[in-house]
Length: 201
Image 1 (cartoon, rainbow, N blue to C red):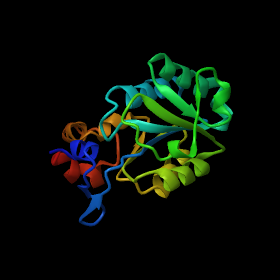
Image 2: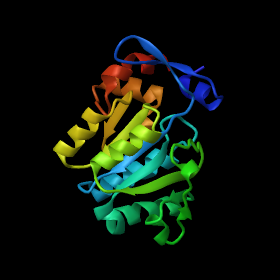
Image 3: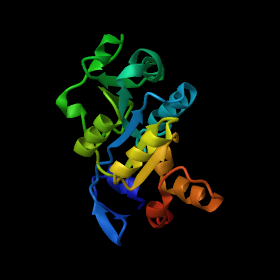
């Protein structure tokens, strides 16, 4: 049984870490941080794919964090596109001003929906995004959408998720996709730590 299938059934699975192996809890809380320097086309394509391609796998996005400076531009556009695809957006007080966004509760932060739902929250900067992920994430897969190298580097340095991505869909966290990426020479994620895990899925 693959680790994604096991997670769907509420089972702990064996994941690779820096040293040896560790048991991962069944929850897979995948975050995407939409930075102020995100490319609008990439942001739209990545978020839509990460949430809607397959909602029941461990790489499906469950929470979208949006930089406060782009809420009314890129952020709103991405949320409306998600809702147009049938995704139920559970947003914080700021995002509830957008027509169609549902009120988020405390239970929505850190929730694995495995369905056409996503939590969404406004953050002041990359550090607040990192703090949120540390509080509510599961150290499985997290992504930053940005064209700023320094911001991306900080995101990668301050988080210790098994898979960290930049400008790539978290659906690549599927074991078959990671194994293909490794064979083809692509580097959509921190594949070095995930390589052995991916080959076993």
